[in-house]
Image (cartoon, rainbow, N blue to C red; front, top):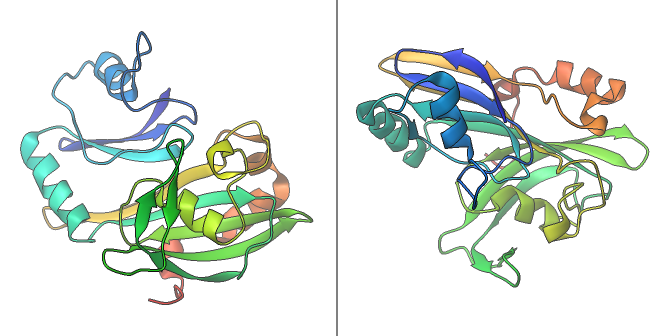
Amino acid sequence: MYTLIHQDPRFYLVDKRAGASFHREGEEDGLMDALRAGLGDDALWPVHRLDRITSGLILVARSAETARQLGEALAGREVEKYYLALSDRKPLKKQGKVSGDMAKGRGGAWRLLASQDNPAVTQFFSYSVQPGIRLFLLRPRTGKTHQLRVALKSQGAPILGDALYGGGAADRGYLHAYALRFALDGEAFSFVCPPSQGERFADPACRALLAELAEPWTLSWPGA
């Protein structure tokens, strides 16, 4: 369900597997249950969450005070988050910014609106991996439900394996929380976690691209 990436006296950083639920669902343990059991630590506070289809980096605080500090940093947009996604569709534009309010749609999906009252904002680059497959590097500037999935849907390039938003069939949902950058108690942290699941992510051409994107915070992001 997870791999421990980094252990600090104040927090854990884990790589969640795609398909693992964050919360308990019926008889199925959620990620937090698995962490408490696997790490032997009941005093855990989730700082943020990932959808079931999404793999990658999750911060878990080891005290209420650290959870408060990191939560405030997230709310203040002081935590940089970077994601990877794959699509088998060509986007309306190869790079740019997607911004708009979000509203609930049908069947648990959300949709992007033209209004900008409290918009979800996402910056992105895209790269050709091979004919018919495109890699997206995404930087959400807000933290709305399904924000990245809706952003790519709005570009005509739903995420591969994301059936809810019309993505093509695949062995997993191809959305991965790739990198985090933040400060805590004056100490700077940067983490990058390449995806470990999925045939398409394992493709040599995709791996070669990721090697060039190992420090996403150094890029000149569009629409900043």
